[in-house]
Amino acid sequence: DVSFNVGKATPTKFLVVQVHYKNVTKFLPPQSGEDSSGLTLITTHVPSEKQAGVYIMLTGGSLPSNTVEYFEVACEMTEDIEIIPFAFRTHAHTLGRVISGYRVRDGVWTEIGRKDPRLPEMFYNVTNPGITVKKGDILAARCTMHDTTDHTVSIGATQTDEMCNFYIMYYVNKPPTLQADDYCMSAGPPAWYWKDYPDHEKLNLKGVPDTASVIPGANAPLKRNVSQVYFFDSTTNVDDMPDLNDESLADEIVNQAFEELDPQDLVYLYELAQWQEQQEREQQLQQQQQEEEEERFRMLMRNQQV
Image (cartoon, rainbow, N blue to C red):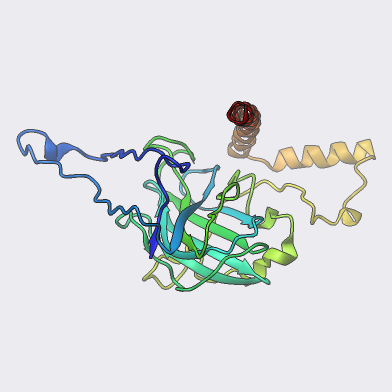
């Protein structure tokens, strides 16, 4: 009943298989095992009743050594298309402990899926079959990470880095599938958490399930224990803050704050500033690449019209 639309007349013109091996020892002498990795595809020239698509949620960010941290992301659905999630997949590297995904509608959080990413990496059935997601709903995900190393680990592409991905496989009762609104991304910690979502009332953080950071089969959640420098945000009541226009008072506050910081905190502030600068550079580069890609697409469309 459900299939992905692929082929010459579709955006998906090629199917590429890429296999990543974490350990190839069993394929080398003296074991010399045979590799049977691959995929089995079922194809048809007859369009199926329902068309499938994939929505991905992912974050940037980093976590200090010997800490538990939450990598969170949330986006509102903007396309006027109803999707029906039927499977989900989680992905992290060695520090991921549990990844959970939700639909938030009218402030109510409904679980799409929750899994320990250390288990076999494949798509699993959703927690609530028949769940739908439509325009105005919020999709949210959290990766709970436990850094057991002696150094800070950041999101990146290599095995020594980390990743926080939650995939939703869905179908629509009639085409099209999601086009521009098929992914959701946040900067991740320490720059972004669910509390930084602009519409607090709509996201309703009081409704976050207690199981969001509970590894399936466990009884208690993994609790975040990162010491974080305080940042002002849109919810800060500035009327209750001291008058920082008073230079002597401002100097006193700054001096006192630095006196209370230990060397590790100063290093953290420096690393945070470096990270923020890197994020800004990467965002500028991504914006430039996106604009170039859009311009190439517009030129292609104009050439086709000619």
